[in-house]
Image (cartoon, rainbow, N blue to C red; front, side, top):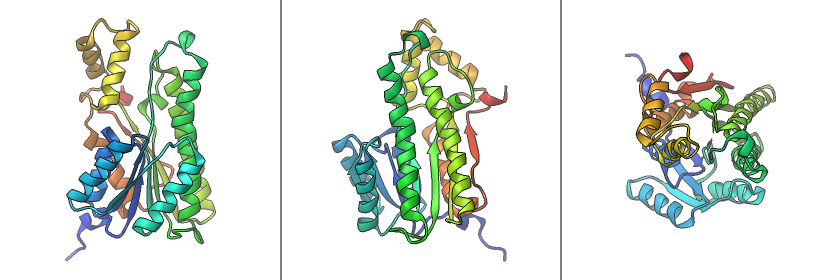
Length: 272
């Protein structure tokens, strides 16, 4: 009998750190990876919400711990990874999920707002890569290699009116992913780095995007904004599970030869 092909997707014995996991995509990713057997270390800047999320995961039978975590602060990254190693036995998986989106026309975008989006989306991802790789590489505090997934966006590939700051940040994440993937591979670290590029997903952030189109006068009301998004995505807007399942593939042994790749999750929007 041939081996069970689904076994390659199991994460038993692995420890996954997921940022921005209090709600939305991060919460779904944590639930999915825990369901595949991983212990999960969930972090977020929202103290009460992330504690509740970890409790929910434990209530469902997962090994789970949490930390309050500002991804723009290097000391927070050092503490979070040290806690994952101490409390759960190491780190094998990092999902750089934490991020923000806000809409403004390029000529109206305040410098402070542009810089805040870059700081969270780009600097936060950079710091996650830096400290996870330090821990995962040979001789590190975990030292058994691993897999990293960065949340980029369809907006890294398409220009979107009102989203110039966000597009810039996710384009940076896209390129940073490829540079990290090559560096880890060429230096023999045993660490794979990939990115996922979702279109509009039905989460609080997705709803905020629709509100922004109305606020900027790019759509007359929410119903028309949603209709436009459904037209952009030939299969309609996505669900959080669509992203979480793709990430499960990327962090599992099923993707052991997938490195520096970008998985576009947009129901066909980028194919038009």
